Length: 226
Image (cartoon, rainbow, N blue to C red; front, side, top):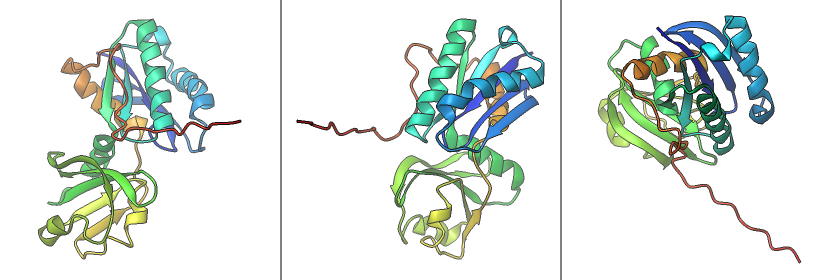
């Protein structure tokens, strides 16, 4: 039996949840952009308080590992690692695309393919393709979307596209086999369920070496002044 704290900070929405094993006890979401750094710690405390759980009672921390927002991922992972160091408990990481694909797979019983998409700006998305049992069909990649994207798969498969990167792709991916789902985003309330599955398999991360899955390297340009 385990109490898990889950942190999801990979997109514009920040969420925190507490699970007892795979059962949700409490969850909180904050739909305010660029607020993760200042609001994550209070959100954690509020969610633990509603759950009636002290930090010292936690058995593991689950974090959404990316891909996603560079800043959001850094905040979520650094906070998770700090808690795990202090409490001497395991860190469980879940791929963000797997997390949102899991949500749709629970709702969909038909024979289709699933394509979670996270916005990577302009016409680029982080994405992968799975079947409805979450078995990988195409691996995670950063892909620029055009009218030929997934053309071969769409010829013989119904594909559902979802996540915050999918809406901008809808006018471009116009095949009759393409379906688009709104309102799907990574949630800590589901993150804990996947985290618990990994915990009971002893599938945890090394606290020293673990880093977020950025997928693409983040480059900054130095400014020469004077």
